[in-house]
View (cartoon, rainbow, N blue to C red):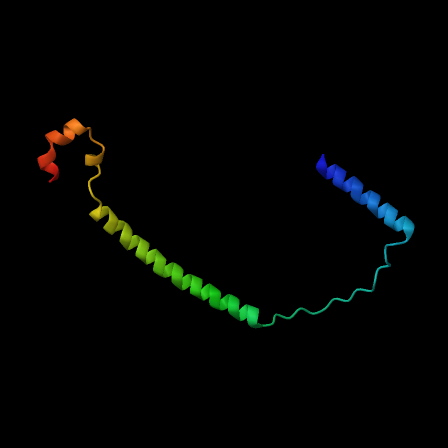
Length: 95
């Protein structure tokens, strides 16, 4: 419904502007040749992409190593979830 309202209002604006003569005539178009230039923005984009790839590589390796170390060094958490009575019964196990 909103699309139909946008189309109708666009056509209404076009008719009003055309009726008042506010739409300029079409200019002659020329197709310009496109050339890719290597300006400062292109150089900065290449450098930023390289820096991102390098930092991602470092982060990827460090997270893989830290995940295995964290799993190995993780403390036993079941003692924190036990009831106080079972903790007292098994105090010698956790010391």
